Amino acid sequence: MKMLVGLAALAVAGGLTAAICLAAGSGGTDWQASCRAAPASTAGKHSGAVAEARKALLSNGNDPRLEIEVADLDACAVEVGWKADQPQPTASVVKLLIALDLLDQSGVPEDSEADAVHAMLAASDDRVASRFWQRLGGPAIVRRQAGKLGLTHTSPPADPGQWGSTKMSPEDVVAVYRNITSGRSDEERDFLTEALESAPLNAADGFDQHFGIPRAFPGTVWAIKQGWGTSEGRRVLNTTGLVRTESRTFAVAVMSTWDDDIDVATAAKALTAATGALKDSLAGTGKLA
Image 1: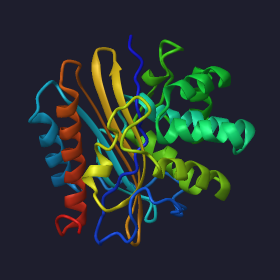
Image 2: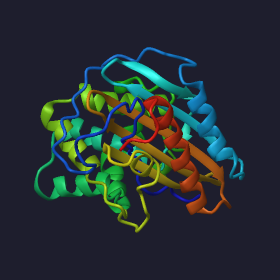
Image 3: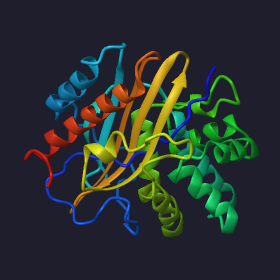
Image 4: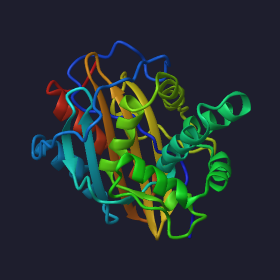
């Protein structure tokens, strides 16, 4: 089995009703939000957005499967949901759980260890992730964080060494971002989000990780964790993260798998289009300036 690799922490969002005053990746954004409890369901609120997102994937064939959750972390309400309770291979989105577990066990890291965690989150460095995975107990990381955060659709990989085959639902990924924005100390939150805001165009393995949220929401402030790779014969592409408008903070998780023979660039373009459909619908006024 191939290990799912890449980045997957995505800052993503809908409800974009106004121009954004800060540039993406600029750093220094205060991502604190007030949504601690599970957000209220608004099933069917943006059914048109879901239909457009699904169309973007289905038009490319290769048996695409899509799951979505977009939550307003200020109103504490789900804006868009589609199969949000369905587990999906995470690829590098699991690096969020690794980072949270490290903070729980030893606090905010310093010096070279801080640099290593930053590289794992921002550049999605797989070597760093593998080192922390082994050090912290591998699958035990997933079980601890699932229990602490109430992640009911999250499970460790069948093969303990394949951290990228951890499974999470979009609903659970959003719960992780809720914990980061409302359940952590200022120091912990700033440490994590500064890394997620700093995700470069090319990851440590050279992969273009600005598919999905960054390209779907140009000009917005985001903090992302992306994921890509293969698992159980399926191509995996996930875009997740936080997106800030002038007045709101959103958590976004758009997760997809395809037949493994799909061209990666084609799948990334389709997932970006699907994510963009969510923005256009929630904005209500078309493209952002």
